[in-house]
Amino acid sequence: MEEIMKLLAPGLTIAIGGALPALAIGLMAAKAMEAIGRNPEAAPKIQTAMILAIAFAEAIAIYALVVALIIKFV
Amino acid sequence: MEATPEISLAAEQIASLGGFPITNSLLLSGLVTVFIIIMSWVIRYQVALVPAGFYNAVESVVEGLFNLAESVFGNFEEAKRYFPIIAALFLFILLNNWAGLMPGVGPITSGHVPLLRGGTADLNTTLALAIISVGITQYYAMARLGFFGNVGRFINLKNPILFFVGILELVAEFAKVLSFSFRLFGNIFAGEVLLVVMAFLAPYLAPLPFIGLELFVGLVQALVFAMLTLVFLKVAVAESHNT
Image (tube, rainbow over all chains, first blue to last red; front, side, top):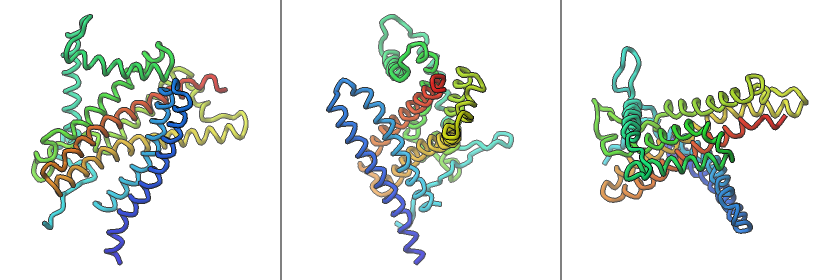
């Protein structure tokens, strides 16, 4: 049982912890594309805000990755 | 093939200077700092009206960063005032990220422990950078708004809702420190682990696209750190309109 958990824990951590931020980033990028399509002149502003927001979402995925690495290697 | 690659979350100590432990990441970030200082010295004697070569490349980087700062602040004077810290953070983090990919970082060992390790792959470095970033934001906010003006951003006694919002803002400042440090550390350390594992699994040709990925990730993370500091600075310094 312990062997099973040892193998499963990091895998599940990064799988779930990576899937949800990926979904969030996809939604954000989709909305940003829509906004740029409606108003191409505002593209630089939208792009900057989008990159910022994606960085926040990606940070959560990175937390999950660090926890998975800690579980596996420490 | 029973062996697994040795991956250590914490940077390993290779020497000690009068009781102060010197780790391999400290050594590499020290070398990067010396490199930056030498480059700055070399550049300052190449200033000319029509730039050429290396100076041209450096100037385009500085100009790109300054345009970014100016577009966020919307104001040349303010951008000029806050530009040095932003550019310093960007260049330091970028060069440290890329230094971790240099050949020799890893294989050259002292005893059983790598002599060099990426500076930003150490949580201590990224935590220090995060504290500097958030601390400088508070300092500039105090310089602009006065000490009580800055405290007034967080402890707002006008009405209960604003008071609660102020407390949340205070918590958010600490969350920013954690988030900055872990974002940078996680990205760079995970990159190193990825490269080690790829080299362990398929040593010929396969690690190449991953090194390319790590170059890109290093650039993006430095940019994100600098941009986030820039945006938080802007928010902190602009508070005077909000009361």
